[in-house]
Image (cartoon, rainbow, N blue to C red; front, top):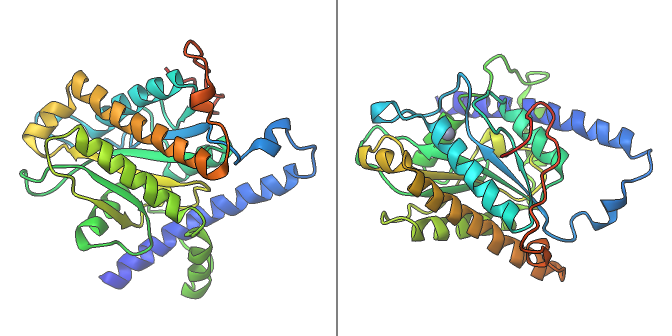
Length: 299
Ligand SMILES: [Zn+2]
């Protein structure tokens, strides 16, 4: 079973790699054109974040007692976090701003097209035990840091189409692709953001933090920026589910996530010796995010 699971993950990686390679080919074609004026500044200063509300449409995600759906909770929190971050002058791109299905690899493409500085995927957790509670934050690794983390990744990867197969079908080229996709370039910063988010979310929660973990999440694969996935509470825990459905709690969680993003941005800029877009923005300035094809504007 373990081999099957690894092969399934390898297939997922390979399919994402195809998307990734296609995007790279497009970039190579565009490279022949004059570069956009902001190209020189890209990567110098933290200015954009992608907020990814998990699931959507037919994919409800986890379901809580009383019929509360993960897809609805995480969209509320994502939109609230986006509003807060925009009020600080950051450009925010939402992978979805309504109840619509978005493929995992499409979320990756949106993030890379946005040329953002950070990718934050928001989810709610589920467990067979109704007593399970608390916050978990993750960044990408091929190997789950423990068995439970592997199960979380398997559940969050379910939306990934089963009609996907690895090109060639041989394990070795797939393994080579995997090595390319799990870039170590953004590992340290992904870890840093996952830790900041864990701290801020734990501060907003009476439950003990369940820690920073690593697991093979498809939605984080091929994202060319620091990236983390946040499980903001257990929707299968009746008490947590009730709170996750409350506007006040959603505001608190969004505030914690926004706070972590702003602190990450401050450190990101300090490392690069750049002034922060967030700090430089006038208080009344609320820039709109760029258009996301097929996704409409944010709110
Ligand atoms: Zn989820």
